Length: 265
Ligand SMILES: NC(=O)c1ccc[n+]([C@@H]2O[C@H](COP(=O)([O-])OP(=O)(O)OC[C@H]3O[C@@H](n4cnc5c(N)ncnc54)[C@H](OP(=O)(O)O)[C@@H]3O)[C@@H](O)[C@H]2O)c1
Image (cartoon, rainbow, N blue to C red; front, top):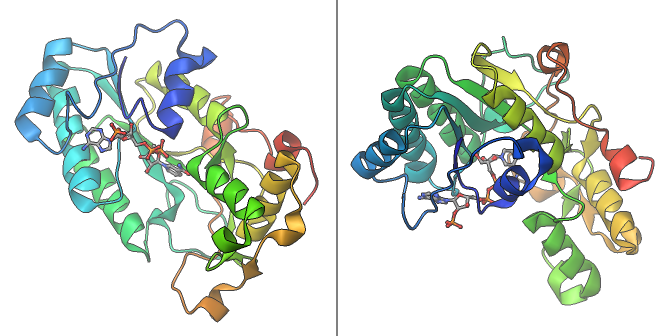
């Protein structure tokens, strides 16, 4: 299995976790395989001859997300490898009903637009790729960058200034270990093609999620600055719930965030 972005938050959960214990792993870093460079990315992947490529690498810019994903998909296709590509729930813009894989994506933020364009580039270059859409990721042994930032904010009023956790923005958080397990599972199932939703079964607001993480850290959740999207004047996907029944039929599930972080919403 060749993994891009192995040094990132999800990548560490994948390559260091139990999910890939039986896999022989190849993890070229951004120093040796910068995915924005087409020829060297395709050559590197083809030369390693992996059975499967898991593409997690990203940076929040269009060349990395869209061009980089296309290059990785072209490399996987050239190597004859299966491809598991990582995407996001915010390819959707938010609505009352959960989104299934059959729903037409409609992003309303630039990151979602880039990730949707990446999905389309991947599907074109590698038509049998699995495209995993997930929601907000968190960790327990290894906290996410957002959790580290929250912990700092809970310690310092200065760090809290300018921070707002929305009470009206809802998502379905997933533990990175669960998503890593799902990705490794899908790496061994080349018959699963196209989008597949892998997210937590619980819908919580950003403010509730922050509160759960704070309590898990043993911090005072009342210190969390909250507000609404409307007050902020921002355009954000307010309610993105992924229907995860396709994954569940394959035995792929994520634990409820309240069960993992040990509290009730
Ligand atoms: N974290 C979330 O809450 C979340 C939610 C939904 C979807 N996702 C998706 O999950 C995937 C992984 O996210 P993450 O949070 O684990 O990301 P991350 O922690 O930011 O890690 C990004 C990884 O990509 C690598 N990378 C960046 N630019 C690169 C380049 N040009 N060439 C090669 N490698 C490059 C980084 O390596 P260097 O450090 O060496 O640059 C790092 O290993 C992404 O596709 C993301 O869109 C994440």
